[in-house]
View 1 (cartoon, rainbow, N blue to C red):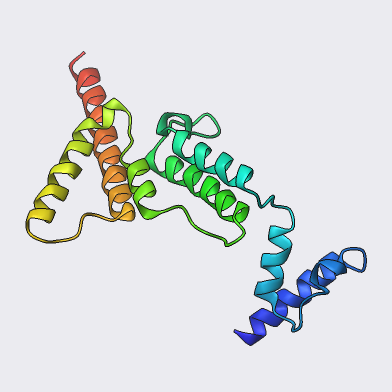
View 2: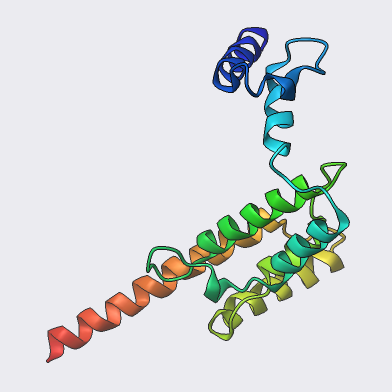
Length: 168
């Protein structure tokens, strides 16, 4: 830990040079991780307005708007975009606060109509878990289930295409 921490410190101070060394001047010890956090936050606006902006952006993002580079949107692209916004949200808060787990859960279940079978199955499984006194699925488990659903759906679609071309 100490060695890697010192490496981070050395690289940061070298990259900042004399011109931007003031960013780390208030530090009492050579803590590379803390220095990285200070530099990272130095370009982030920390205010109620920016916090509100990123929270709204997080809540308004839809899976169908999460694709990049002309790809089809997927649960993976959705989680990636949500994570980027969540990081900006965290940086906008003076206390580095995170987006609450319940909001993450709400978002990973906020899916387009063509995911209704997967969402229904998840809701039924969670209701049954609650009846047994067990925990509901975590956001990571939900995302993994939906990703598996996407793979199965894509495979079935490709199989139908192959079957049609074999018959025709």
